[in-house]
Every structure is written in structure tokens, then in C-alpha cells.
Length: 288
Ligand SMILES: Cc1cc2nc3c(=O)[nH]c(=O)nc-3n(C[C@H](O)[C@H](O)[C@H](O)COP(=O)(O)OP(=O)(O)OC[C@H]3O[C@@H](n4cnc5c(N)ncnc54)[C@H](O)[C@@H]3O)c2cc1C
Image (tube, rainbow, N blue to C red; front, side, top):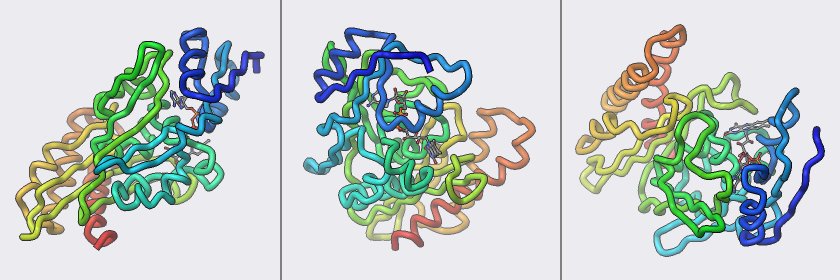
């Protein structure tokens, strides 16, 4: 590893000032569970400056303001998983956090790092998009807020500039009674990244009709997006196994149309459909 300058700011202002001073030469370090793996690869390019934000306590908070949940990017997956605020207002995010890595990774890896790394298999992103999350980016020029759904350009690339620090994630708390589920398919059950995943939010009104549906497949498209075609099918209908199977088929068709037919299609086509169906069914078995 080449030597580098190591800066440990105590506040967002200090971090932003350091990123401004060193520009593209600096890299933000949070939990380091992605970065350390990257830097230990043979031939890895080390930054000249590392800005370690892990001591900025104000970035580690969760709060409920009105009907909105505000999350600091330094919240670890373990903290997300055990937060009562998240479990009641965005339960699928806590479910997703529970599937990440091992206890060691969940105690170290952060929400902000998972988002900013932009890996297509990042487990917190599909739930956050389903929840309608926005992120705040802070720099010497001030703050700007972006919808997470438009935040990723391509795998491992976001619209954030090098000098910008992710300082907040927020989303509207789900109304009581909303059903949610996150299902992840890996090569094995533990310590495994997603081959595919699905996040779903479904709201059924008093007459038993679906009035809100959000479905976001993970590790399926080049960048995450809601499956509007399947969501539209669900709205105005009553939950049923047949309906959920139809929705699964639609999501699968859309993904395959976008990615094109290739060697893995024979596997992916039925598996995406089944995973979507299972996720929607889970909404009703898990949360009932
Ligand atoms: C063994 C192992 C298993 C894993 N399993 C999973 C898994 O199952 N699911 C999954 O989704 N991920 C998994 N990961 C990946 C990783 O743990 C997560 O992506 C984690 O959330 C990254 O967070 P971090 O704080 O460690 O990020 P870091 O490594 O510190 O940073 C990651 C990237 O984000 C940037 N960054 C971090 N915070 C900010 C910020 N606030 N503002 C601007 N940029 C920022 C960094 O500059 C860097 O580019 C695994 C990793 C390992 C090593």
C-alpha cells in the first residue's frame, strides 16, 4: 500500500473543507468494508488523501420528523436492523440490512457506503428506492437533494461529484398497515451477495383492494428502477397468488427485454418471476 495523507474530521464542515481542498485526490472512508477490499487488490490505485468520516457523530443518527424518517449515512447495517423507527416506518430496509454480510460486516459497514459504492448487488438500495428515498449531498457550495431513483448512472457510478459528501438519507415513513418484504437470492444463505433481490411495498385499503404497490428488483437491471408495469397491474385488484404470479412474469419479461437474451436467461427468467411472486406473498404472510 502506498503512503497517503490521513485526515479525521470531527464535523461535516471539516470533512467538506478537506474534500474541497484536496478535490479528486481525496477519498471518503466510512466503515472501509468496500474500500479496504478494493485497496488490497494487486495494482489498486490508492488515493493521495483519505478522509475518514467515521468520527462524525452527527452522521450516525436516526430520527422521525413529522412523518419523515431521517438517517445518517454512518448508521451501520446492525443499527438499521435494530432501529425501532425503521422497523415501524420502513421495515423492508431493516430486513435488507439483516441479510448483509456477517455480524462483523453489519457492525462496520454503513448505509452511506452501501449507497455510494453503487454495486448492483447493494442490498439497501432496492428498499430505499421502494420507500421513495432522497439523499442529501453536501459540499463547499452547499447542500443538494437528489432522488435515489435517479442517483445512479451505471453500476458503481453515481451522480455525486468527487467533492460531495453524502450527509443524509430520508424517506416518508410508511403508513401503519403497509405490507413490505425484501427477499434476496444468493449462492448460499449466509455471507453472500445478492444474485437477485426484490423489495416490495404494498398497501391494501379497508375494502381489500391494493391502492399502492412498489416493486424494485435488485441486481437485475444496470441501475435500479421500480417495475411500474407490474405495479400498475396490482393497483385496484385484490391480493391473490394468481395476481402475484402475473406480476412476477411481467417483471421478468421487462428485465429480460432490457438485458437481452443471453446464456443466463434460461435461469433468470423463471427465477425473477418466482422471486417477485414470493416477495409479494411474503408481504402478506410476514407482516400479517
Ligand atoms: C465479506 C463482505 C461481505 C459483504 N456482504 C454484503 C452484502 O451481503 N450486501 C451488500 O450490500 N454489501 C455487502 N458487502 C459490501 C459492504 O459491506 C457494504 O457495501 C457496506 O455498506 C459499505 O459501507 P462502508 O461504510 O464499509 O463503505 P466504505 O468501504 O467506507 O466506502 C464505500 C464507498 O462509499 C464511499 N463513501 C462512504 N461513505 C460516504 C459518504 N458519506 N459520502 C460520500 N462517499 C462515501 C467511499 O468513498 C467508497 O467509495 C460486503 C463486504 C464484505 C467485505
